[in-house]
Length: 201
Image 1 (tube, rainbow, N blue to C red):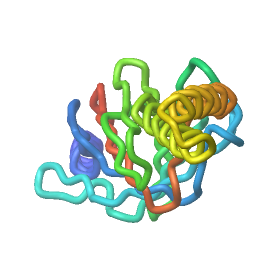
Image 2: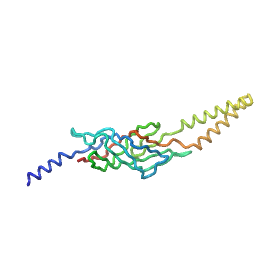
Image 3: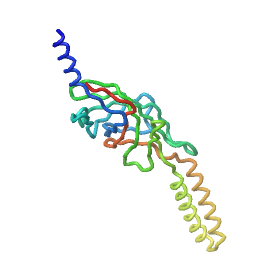
Image 4: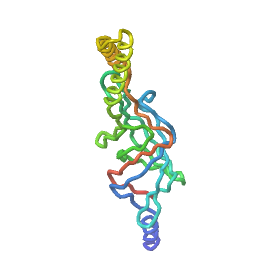
C-alpha cells in the first residue's frame, strides 16, 4: 500500500507545475471594448498570444482562453476627466477544459489608439491628455478667423477681430467636445504580470 501511495504522490508531483511569481503573459483581445459603451461587469475575452513555460514544460499554450471583467469604466469628459477602463482578469482555460482562477495585474497595452497607458497600481488603462489637440484646434480656428476678418475689411484690425472670434469659437468647440475614449480593439495586446505563483496541474 505504501508503494502505491508513494507512486500516486510522485505522479501528482510530476503532473503539477507552477507559474512563478513575476511571470509575464501576453494576451490578445478577442472582442473589442471601449469606454463609450462599456459598463461595470461586462465580460472581456482574450487568448494567450504567447505560451508560458517552466521546468522544461509548456504549462500554458498559446491560444488558451482567458476571461476578464470590466471593473471600472469612465467616459472622457467635455472639460475635465480622462477616459479610464479597468479590467480584472478572472480565469484561464486550458485546451483540456481545466479552468484556473488567476488575478494578474495589467502591465502595458499595445493598441492602435495613441496616448493610452496602463496604471499598474490601479490596474486601469487611461487615455492620455488631449491638450495638444485642443491647442491645435484653437490655433487653426483663430488663424481661419484672422484670414476671414482681414479679407472682410482689408485691415489688421479686421484680422485681429477675426482672430479673436475664431479663437473664441475654438475654445467653445473644445469645451463642447469630449476627449478621446479608451478603446481596446480586437487584436490589441495586453501584457499582464502574475503577482503570485499559480499551480497548474
